[in-house]
Image: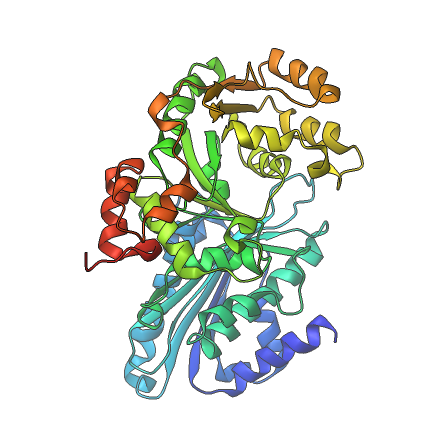
Length: 465
């Protein structure tokens, strides 16, 4: 079915439903969303006002001053003002029978010169029922088409999808998310932030929605902070030096934090990092969360998220199993130095040639992509047969030794200081002990992690003990 047919039907369904009435305000790429409602017919039943304040001075006069016009702050100002105007102007007249809404977007599409980032903020603030408190859905979109007309078309479609989903699927947040790319592909639009708020979404955890974005392929990665709030990755990573540790964190152990602390000390010695704000991240891959299956256990995911929050760590969820793909994602969003933190077993896995069979150039192409921006791996030692093994004493396959030595000499691997009593601690051992009478696991995790596991009964801990 042609994309426009289905989108037109959605717009017509909204137009013919007399419950919702409100404003569509758009800045940056034309009246792309409003256009669908006027084309569908019957828009007088839905659209009280359609407007676009392209000129910055005009936009400031309507919505107040803004440092950045394509920003979440500007979008929120638009939603708040337009929604309140509808309530103030029309509430007495038709408030008993009408659910008011305000839709807004502020975007930058492909310019004539090209080369600019094509992205925007889009949202809807709406009443699910007349006289109800408002609810809100906000998304950040990246337009991936090469030409401006195609970007504008895609923006209009996702805008109609958002309005339709907010009105008809707000009681099913998962379906709301899934419907955003109806009649589009992830090759045209990426959504890397989705935030639901207000009375209809009071039971929604936006960290689960961040997971959902990656799970269904709307984005390759999503982020949230230790305060549980979702983050827009490009803004969170921009211009920062980034230190990332990927792991299961099931649960986070004292070793995980010791690795990060030692890595940060070494990372900050780099002159290229000295003038930058350092952002330390914990990364969970979708492959890890799926644990070999197709389904993600959301309770397990939230347990890990809460424990990482207790450690003060922002979380990146990604679908980038290969390290070089994660490196490329981060490098696209910052011009600062990037470091990855790992244990020696993970470095050994990187030197398994079978893991790189999917690339035409095999392990050489994989390492070329991984280290091209002077990325460094900060590597924590391991115990093997009672002996401490470090980067400098690690043995790899004979044919790979020259490659290993070359990368080591160029500084791609940075060996980390360690605490000897930490080396025997493994997450899987801690996880095995938690449901038992063995309390030895408590010393293997940070105190705040142990306290939260016992308080919430995570990972099978018996709270009645």
